[in-house]
Each structure stands twice: as structure tokens, then as C-alpha cells.
Image 1 (tube, rainbow, N blue to C red):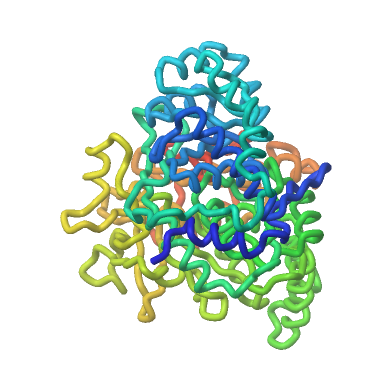
Image 2: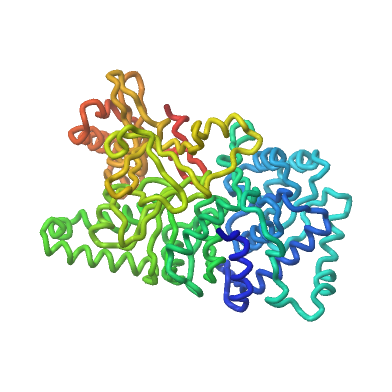
Length: 562
């Protein structure tokens, strides 16, 4: 296995003049691979002048941008440890977790810094550590807060002069050498926090170089050569799914990454995809499901499409039309297709994708594996599965009969984390006695080792009669109903309750009062009982106007609603 930094090193030298990353928005700004390297070198000089050493931690707290990618690679190529925080985290949590993880520097954007300025006491908390150097602006590495009595500010003021003196004949591809000596694949390179609350509740996943390297090499093996190909990055780069395959993989492969800042609306997303024409697109089920609910389902549920879809032969006319429309919407430049991860895909959506032969796959992973656990190329992908193990990771089901009896999914291999930062108890609990990582997910294999996830262990509802209910399967059905935005099934007083968030705006457009809409959805939900086993029938519903509280990866915080 090669260290992931060596791939980036080679890529920068080989594709020096090719476009590397673009801020896609009102003001489009592009960096070539060579320009990225120049900005990275200036970071390195600043790190050196302020006493940052190999293994020191540097935090990044900013929205997606081309500059985020530069700061990220500047940290990793310097052999420091990156601590990326999702922009959804509160500043107070970033300060606590940054201090807990002993970060010596914080790199943030204007939005984050303005939030800091509204709570000045946060600066004092950061500076309680005598080793904390200060805060840099991710846009240009300028100093936003100097915690060193002028040392950081002086270092920044002298960066350009030092750069010029070091590279009197110009900074070229030959100047780049991020791999001066062999690097330890077991050394920590990243601490990724699983939630943005406090150090008492958040777990800092410590990832070694081998984890990022294993994920990168899998991508290089599985995804066709894509030098100069386009990536449209919308996933949070601080989250491992986006980081591994919207950042690490494309920059090691000579791709051109277009970064959409902020959370894209469907209109902005589709306009961006049509313009960029990515050869692959990483996303989460929620994005695909929104497109289907707004664009596809309304058409397929009306006459004559609804009738034609039931007639063999004629159904292909409708399916081909939808497929063509979707491919155009996604830019029509796919060679790899849409890669979906982060949660289960709605079954009705997946049924239609498979019927129309749309190029998609659903993968599976977790932060603790940096992130990939399973995947299968679109040509072999089996519906409802998450593919097979992503070599070199191994998967087992903790069950006497993994093809028939549900068990916890457990994994082992180079991609697996070292443990949780300063949390030996949680680390020990995460591994079995024979060294396998517990994922907390329940699943089965088919006869070709395809993995099928049934739900989270902790979400399972145990009935009074001893039956196991996985609420995700029921929620999948409810979420397909008209006027339903999202749902949650919980167990209360020996009954299953469906908590349903309604689309009241859609109801108003269809001239439905709030009371009429509540009654209609209630009737539709309870009608689903005819499709459910006796022990998993819905007892009653509760309608909601406000969406559920979400985690940074947009999973519902279920514990708040039990």
C-alpha cells in the first residue's frame, strides 16, 4: 500500500498546469494544481515559522470551498494531523473539541469568525492552552487572531519574502516534494468528531494514514481513469464520505473539482450539474429522493404514465423518457454514475432507478473506516444492497447463519480506525474480543456476499411478544405517501407510533385545509397496516409541522423522540 500523500505528490507534479479546483458560484475562481501547490507551500512556511511540528493538530472549521481543499492538503502534506469540523457545529463546541484534541491552530472562514466574534469569551478559552498559536482566515491564510504576542502576525507578514528567497528561480513542479522520507502508514493523520456537542459526548475518531490510503487505492482501482474529468462536490468536505471521494480521490487522480459552497437548493444543484457535467456524482439519499418527489413521482402517478408503466413493453417508453430526463438533469456526462451513501435509499425510488437502468450504486461506510465498507460497480450492483466488501476490508455478520438470521455487521482491515481520541472505554467497547469493529448496524448476506442492511441495532424495537422490529423499513413505506416529508416510527406503551412531518405547503396548493390534510395522511398511514406483519402495525399517528432534529450527516436524532 502506498501512502495517500505520495499519490497527491505525484498528481501535483504530473498535472501542474491542469485546473484542479473551482469555487462554483457567482464569482468563479479556479486554481491549477501548480497554484494549489504554491498556496500549500506558503502554509508550510507559516507552519515552520510558528513552530508547528510533525504530529501537531490543526483544525479546519469552514464551509466547502477551494480554499478548504488547500488548507486540508497543506496540513496533511506537512505531516500534521488535521481536525476538520463540520460547519454545522456550534463555535462553542469547536472550541471545546479543538481544545480537547490539543489543536495548535484553527483555520476558519468569515462566517465562522463572525460567529466567534459574537462570543468573545471563546477566544479566551482557546488561548487557555499556552501552545495555541492563533486563527487563520482560510481565504488567504491571513491572521484573524494572534495568540503568540505577535509571532504569528510577523510570520505571516514575512511569508512572501521567505517564499521568494527559497525559490529564486521560480516555484515549479520540481520544487514539490511532499514525500521527502517514508511515512508511517500507522501514524494518525486525522481526528474526525462524530457529532458537534461536547468532548463528553462526541467521539474523536483517530484515523491512521493506512485508512485514508486504503480508501484512496480502492477508488483508484474501481473508478475508471478520469484525468481532467469533472467532480461536482456538494457533500460536506469535513465529513469522511465527501472528504474521501470528493477531495482525496479526485486530487490524486488529476480531476477537476467544482465546489458548490453552502447547502444547495434543488434548483441550484440541477443548474450546477447541467453546467459542470460530472463523470460521477456523490450524494445522499435525501437529495435523490427530493428530486424524485418533485420531478419524477408526480409524472409517473398520473394518467397515462401510471397505466403505461404497468404494461410490459409500453413501460419502456415511459422509463426511457424519465431516464433521459434524469441524465440530462445530472449533466449527461456520466461514466461512473451516481454514488449514494450515508443512509438507506427509499425503496420506491430505487425500484424506479433500477427499472430504467439508471447508472447508480448505493455504498456503505462509517467514519471509523475512513469511510468505505462496501461497494459494487453499477454493472454488478444488486438492488437494495450496499454491494460487497471494499477490499482490503473484511466484513462478517455476527450470526449463526448470516444469510438467514440477522446479526451485527462487523469489519476488520487496514481502513479501520486506531480508536477514539482519549477515550479508551469507548474504544474497547467498539471492538470485539477478537479485534473486529462493531458497526452497530444489522444485516444479512446473499449467496454472492452482497450486504443488505436492515437497520441500526439501537433503533430496533422489541415488542412484548419478543418480535424484533426495524422501524426504518416501515418509515420507508410512510415516506412514499403523498404530502409526507419524513417520518419516524417509535415504540410507546406497547404500541408503534408514526411521527409524520407533513408538507402543508403542498396541501394548501391542492386546496386542503390543515385538518383535511391531517385526516388524509393519517388514513394513508394506517392503511399501510395491511402490508405489515401483525406485530409491526402502526397503532396511531402524530402529525408534525417542524422537521426532526438532524445530525451533521442529516440522520434524524431519534433519541429525542422516543
